Image 1 (cartoon, rainbow, N blue to C red):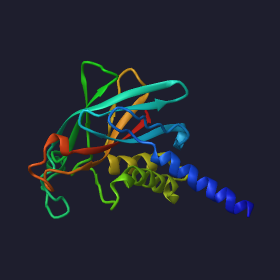
Image 2: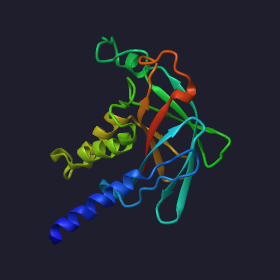
Image 3: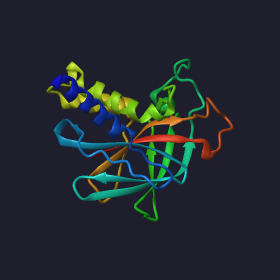
Amino acid sequence: MKMKQILWFSILSLLLVIATGCEKEKRAKTKEEQIFPHNLEFAVFELTTHQACKVACGENGEILISLQDVKDDVDTNCSLAQFDSIQMMEQIKIYAYLNINGDSTRLEVSSKPCGTVSYYCKDKSEEVQDVFRLIDEIRDAPAAQGDSAWFFDTFERLFGKGASIDHTPYRIYLAKADPTKFDAPHARLEDYRLIFILTTK
């Protein structure tokens, strides 16, 4: 009985953490307890255009991130296309332009070549949870045990190289995007939903 209570408490605690999200500049998504290899903290959150998210970083810090613009060059189904060079694939990306802490400059964050991981959950509210699941799969893979280089190489193949946030110890990655130009050629800026991962460098 005691083990069952502990299990239920763990499940409810996990669901509570995952359910915390950003909604129209009013709610903050924080993730302070999760650890990458070598004590890398991370947070996962979703943004739409002109929406802001306040992300807790470390014990006392926070970063305010808002999505200002999206450039979508994913007009090809890469699984069906043939490329003559890696450079051709490199041109097929989604770019997010972020404002960090109200700074006057915009930070460009690009996806991996051929775009991001797709939104594929039946319930769109589960997409952030799915990114946590993908990270856990990489972290828990046998090849990652004792080999941080394998972890980071696999992480970048899935989520791209990300972008460094100036004057902070953090790096941000574009994990998922919906839609793409291939799926919705006439999508408007306000139609886009993007999921980001924030980590220490």
